[in-house]
Length: 252
Image (cartoon, rainbow, N blue to C red; front, side, top):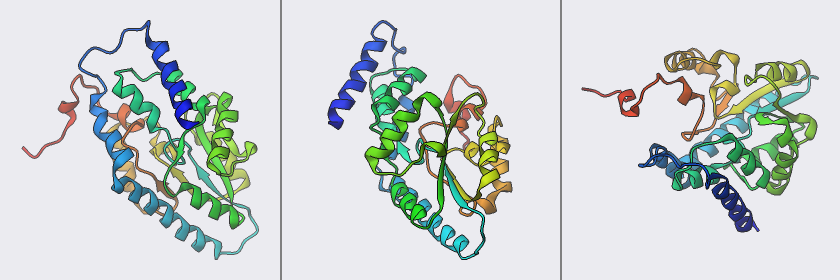
């Protein structure tokens, strides 16, 4: 069944691009190949994910030792934090197809994303300890039903009322503040620095790195970050250049 859905996705994407010119050769997204290979194939990637969720379990246990009456919660991003969407992106790269938000929408509708290593087990554990699981994502509100179906297929618990999806503001800050009105948030999980605090929104690369240093004590404590070399705000934070090689820092 999964192979059938993948075929449907790839056929839809291919048909939607037949009347559009492909990117100029050579493949303009070839620079992403190494990132996708590492993400999909390396044991190191899986180890980092398990490490993040293992640390999170220890952190949650420590917090639960402090008895209080306010309801606890953990807050998750979804894509590349709980869901692995790399299969759709890899198809686009292999076929020299430019990234397009419409392709992403079609991928979401297939509801066949896999789970990030360690995510399902941690979420189940949090729920077993009566900790509320909240999802703040920049998926669109029209994606809610498909997203819930994908959660269900993976056997991951998700409540409709706990999905805070994109309405007007790409920044997640207002939605975080809304959650904090009701819950004592033990940890935030994400693959992008903007999943943790507004300080990282719309900042340049050097500013983002400096803020990471400033908040270094919170990583592994309040902030649990998952590795994602595929895409993210880090790309748009780079200085503009027609040649990515120009951005590399070298010793000479």
